[in-house]
Image (cartoon, rainbow, N blue to C red; front, side, top):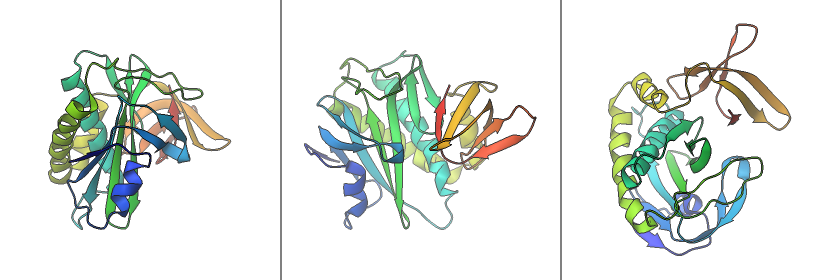
Length: 226
Protein backbone atom coordinates (compact mmCIF):
# COMPACT_ATOMS: atom_id res chain seq x y z
CA UNK A 1 0.00 0.00 0.00
CA UNK A 2 1.47 3.33 -1.10
CA UNK A 3 0.59 6.26 1.20
CA UNK A 4 1.63 9.71 0.00
CA UNK A 5 0.94 13.42 0.43
CA UNK A 6 -0.23 14.67 -2.94
CA UNK A 7 -2.43 17.15 -4.79
CA UNK A 8 -3.62 15.00 -7.72
CA UNK A 9 -6.37 12.43 -8.16
CA UNK A 10 -5.62 8.99 -6.75
CA UNK A 11 -7.97 7.39 -9.28
CA UNK A 12 -6.24 8.91 -12.29
CA UNK A 13 -2.78 8.21 -10.93
CA UNK A 14 -3.35 4.52 -10.24
CA UNK A 15 -5.30 4.00 -13.48
CA UNK A 16 -2.56 5.57 -15.61
CA UNK A 17 0.27 3.77 -13.85
CA UNK A 18 1.16 0.89 -16.17
CA UNK A 19 3.07 -0.84 -13.35
CA UNK A 20 0.07 -0.88 -11.03
CA UNK A 21 -1.59 -4.29 -10.62
CA UNK A 22 -4.81 -5.51 -9.07
CA UNK A 23 -4.70 -5.17 -5.32
CA UNK A 24 -2.40 -2.14 -5.33
CA UNK A 25 -3.57 0.86 -3.35
CA UNK A 26 -2.70 4.55 -3.54
CA UNK A 27 -3.71 6.55 -0.46
CA UNK A 28 -3.32 10.32 -0.24
CA UNK A 29 -3.01 12.08 3.10
CA UNK A 30 -4.19 15.27 1.39
CA UNK A 31 -5.89 15.73 -1.96
CA UNK A 32 -6.56 19.10 -3.58
CA UNK A 33 -7.87 17.92 -6.94
CA UNK A 34 -10.49 15.44 -5.83
CA UNK A 35 -13.17 14.44 -8.32
CA UNK A 36 -16.66 13.14 -7.81
CA UNK A 37 -19.49 12.07 -10.04
CA UNK A 38 -20.14 14.17 -13.16
CA UNK A 39 -16.71 15.78 -12.87
CA UNK A 40 -17.34 17.67 -9.62
CA UNK A 41 -14.14 18.94 -8.03
CA UNK A 42 -13.29 19.95 -4.50
CA UNK A 43 -10.33 20.54 -2.23
CA UNK A 44 -10.10 18.52 0.96
CA UNK A 45 -7.73 18.88 3.87
CA UNK A 46 -5.71 16.57 6.03
CA UNK A 47 -7.36 13.97 8.23
CA UNK A 48 -9.84 12.58 5.71
CA UNK A 49 -9.36 9.39 3.69
CA UNK A 50 -8.73 9.44 -0.06
CA UNK A 51 -7.65 6.16 -1.60
CA UNK A 52 -7.89 4.18 -4.82
CA UNK A 53 -7.30 0.58 -5.71
CA UNK A 54 -7.10 -1.20 -9.05
CA UNK A 55 -9.27 -4.04 -10.36
CA UNK A 56 -8.29 -5.90 -13.52
CA UNK A 57 -11.41 -7.28 -15.16
CA UNK A 58 -11.43 -10.90 -16.30
CA UNK A 59 -13.54 -12.46 -19.05
CA UNK A 60 -15.55 -14.52 -16.59
CA UNK A 61 -16.24 -11.64 -14.18
CA UNK A 62 -19.80 -10.42 -13.49
CA UNK A 63 -20.97 -7.26 -15.29
CA UNK A 64 -18.49 -4.49 -14.48
CA UNK A 65 -21.13 -1.99 -13.21
CA UNK A 66 -22.03 -4.40 -10.40
CA UNK A 67 -18.55 -3.82 -8.97
CA UNK A 68 -20.00 -0.68 -7.36
CA UNK A 69 -22.14 -2.93 -5.13
CA UNK A 70 -19.03 -4.68 -3.80
CA UNK A 71 -17.31 -1.34 -3.27
CA UNK A 72 -20.25 0.08 -1.33
CA UNK A 73 -20.52 -2.95 0.91
CA UNK A 74 -16.77 -2.92 1.56
CA UNK A 75 -16.84 0.76 2.47
CA UNK A 76 -19.77 0.62 4.87
CA UNK A 77 -18.29 -2.52 6.48
CA UNK A 78 -14.92 -0.82 7.03
CA UNK A 79 -16.53 2.27 8.58
CA UNK A 80 -18.62 0.03 10.85
CA UNK A 81 -15.44 -1.64 12.10
CA UNK A 82 -13.51 1.61 12.53
CA UNK A 83 -16.28 3.65 14.16
CA UNK A 84 -19.23 1.45 15.20
CA UNK A 85 -22.85 2.47 15.69
CA UNK A 86 -22.96 5.52 13.43
CA UNK A 87 -26.35 4.96 11.81
CA UNK A 88 -24.90 4.24 8.36
CA UNK A 89 -26.88 3.58 5.20
CA UNK A 90 -25.99 3.02 1.55
CA UNK A 91 -27.53 5.40 -0.99
CA UNK A 92 -27.59 4.56 -4.67
CA UNK A 93 -25.39 4.70 -6.58
CA UNK A 94 -22.18 5.27 -4.60
CA UNK A 95 -22.72 7.11 -1.30
CA UNK A 96 -22.67 6.22 2.38
CA UNK A 97 -24.94 8.29 4.60
CA UNK A 98 -24.62 8.83 8.34
CA UNK A 99 -27.96 9.72 9.90
CA UNK A 100 -29.10 10.94 6.49
CA UNK A 101 -25.98 12.99 5.67
CA UNK A 102 -23.24 12.03 3.23
CA UNK A 103 -20.13 10.82 5.04
CA UNK A 104 -18.40 8.88 2.25
CA UNK A 105 -18.50 8.25 -1.47
CA UNK A 106 -17.09 6.07 -4.22
CA UNK A 107 -16.00 6.84 -7.78
CA UNK A 108 -15.31 4.07 -10.31
CA UNK A 109 -13.40 4.91 -13.48
CA UNK A 110 -12.63 2.44 -16.25
CA UNK A 111 -9.95 2.30 -18.92
CA UNK A 112 -10.11 -0.87 -21.02
CA UNK A 113 -10.08 -3.82 -18.63
CA UNK A 114 -8.77 -1.77 -15.70
CA UNK A 115 -11.06 -0.14 -13.15
CA UNK A 116 -9.89 2.35 -10.55
CA UNK A 117 -12.12 2.23 -7.47
CA UNK A 118 -11.75 5.43 -5.49
CA UNK A 119 -13.01 5.99 -1.94
CA UNK A 120 -13.43 9.23 -0.03
CA UNK A 121 -14.39 9.26 3.64
CA UNK A 122 -14.94 12.32 5.82
CA UNK A 123 -12.97 11.03 8.77
CA UNK A 124 -12.10 14.46 10.18
CA UNK A 125 -14.13 17.12 8.37
CA UNK A 126 -16.88 17.46 5.78
CA UNK A 127 -16.24 19.54 2.64
CA UNK A 128 -19.17 21.72 1.66
CA UNK A 129 -21.12 20.31 -1.27
CA UNK A 130 -23.85 22.58 -2.69
CA UNK A 131 -27.29 21.13 -2.21
CA UNK A 132 -26.06 18.21 -0.07
CA UNK A 133 -26.13 17.53 3.66
CA UNK A 134 -22.71 16.30 4.76
CA UNK A 135 -21.21 14.83 7.93
CA UNK A 136 -17.87 13.74 9.33
CA UNK A 137 -16.65 11.12 11.82
CA UNK A 138 -14.90 13.75 13.97
CA UNK A 139 -11.39 12.29 13.64
CA UNK A 140 -12.22 9.13 15.58
CA UNK A 141 -9.87 7.20 13.28
CA UNK A 142 -6.83 8.33 11.28
CA UNK A 143 -6.44 7.68 7.53
CA UNK A 144 -3.37 5.46 8.11
CA UNK A 145 -5.42 3.22 10.42
CA UNK A 146 -8.50 3.19 8.20
CA UNK A 147 -6.59 2.24 5.03
CA UNK A 148 -5.82 -1.41 5.95
CA UNK A 149 -9.37 -1.93 7.22
CA UNK A 150 -10.81 -0.83 3.89
CA UNK A 151 -8.22 -2.76 1.88
CA UNK A 152 -9.07 -5.98 3.71
CA UNK A 153 -12.81 -5.43 3.41
CA UNK A 154 -12.60 -4.66 -0.31
CA UNK A 155 -10.40 -7.71 -1.00
CA UNK A 156 -13.03 -9.94 0.63
CA UNK A 157 -15.95 -8.31 -1.20
CA UNK A 158 -14.07 -8.44 -4.50
CA UNK A 159 -13.70 -12.19 -4.07
CA UNK A 160 -17.41 -12.52 -3.26
CA UNK A 161 -18.24 -10.40 -6.31
CA UNK A 162 -16.37 -12.86 -8.48
CA UNK A 163 -17.66 -16.03 -6.83
CA UNK A 164 -21.30 -15.21 -6.05
CA UNK A 165 -24.34 -14.71 -8.22
CA UNK A 166 -24.80 -10.96 -8.93
CA UNK A 167 -28.32 -11.05 -7.46
CA UNK A 168 -26.94 -12.18 -4.08
CA UNK A 169 -24.62 -9.17 -3.88
CA UNK A 170 -27.51 -6.91 -4.83
CA UNK A 171 -29.55 -8.42 -1.98
CA UNK A 172 -26.71 -7.77 0.47
CA UNK A 173 -26.50 -4.16 -0.74
CA UNK A 174 -30.25 -3.70 -0.35
CA UNK A 175 -30.05 -4.86 3.26
CA UNK A 176 -27.92 -1.77 4.06
CA UNK A 177 -29.79 0.72 1.85
CA UNK A 178 -32.86 2.93 1.88
CA UNK A 179 -35.98 0.74 2.15
CA UNK A 180 -38.03 -0.43 -0.80
CA UNK A 181 -40.79 2.08 -1.46
CA UNK A 182 -38.68 5.10 -0.48
CA UNK A 183 -39.54 8.12 -2.61
CA UNK A 184 -36.60 9.08 -4.81
CA UNK A 185 -35.81 11.74 -7.37
CA UNK A 186 -33.13 10.71 -9.85
CA UNK A 187 -31.24 13.34 -11.83
CA UNK A 188 -29.96 11.33 -14.77
CA UNK A 189 -28.56 14.37 -16.61
CA UNK A 190 -28.73 18.15 -16.59
CA UNK A 191 -32.36 19.20 -16.74
CA UNK A 192 -33.67 15.62 -16.70
CA UNK A 193 -35.12 13.98 -13.61
CA UNK A 194 -37.43 11.13 -12.65
CA UNK A 195 -39.42 10.73 -9.44
CA UNK A 196 -40.90 7.57 -8.08
CA UNK A 197 -40.46 4.89 -5.46
CA UNK A 198 -37.41 2.70 -4.96
CA UNK A 199 -38.15 -0.75 -6.38
CA UNK A 200 -34.79 -2.44 -5.78
CA UNK A 201 -31.83 -3.17 -8.04
CA UNK A 202 -31.09 -5.06 -11.19
CA UNK A 203 -28.36 -7.71 -10.88
CA UNK A 204 -25.85 -5.32 -12.47
CA UNK A 205 -26.58 -2.66 -9.85
CA UNK A 206 -28.94 -0.50 -11.92
CA UNK A 207 -31.74 1.25 -10.00
CA UNK A 208 -35.36 0.19 -10.41
CA UNK A 209 -37.73 3.14 -10.02
CA UNK A 210 -41.49 2.58 -9.82
CA UNK A 211 -43.20 5.49 -11.56
CA UNK A 212 -46.64 6.89 -10.86
CA UNK A 213 -48.18 5.21 -13.91
CA UNK A 214 -47.19 1.76 -12.64
CA UNK A 215 -44.25 1.29 -15.00
CA UNK A 216 -40.69 0.52 -13.91
CA UNK A 217 -37.80 2.67 -15.11
CA UNK A 218 -34.31 1.14 -14.95
CA UNK A 219 -31.67 3.79 -14.30
CA UNK A 220 -28.01 2.96 -14.87
CA UNK A 221 -26.46 6.28 -13.79
CA UNK A 222 -27.57 9.43 -12.02
CA UNK A 223 -27.72 11.34 -8.75
CA UNK A 224 -30.40 10.47 -6.22
CA UNK A 225 -32.20 12.69 -3.74
CA UNK A 226 -34.15 10.95 -0.97
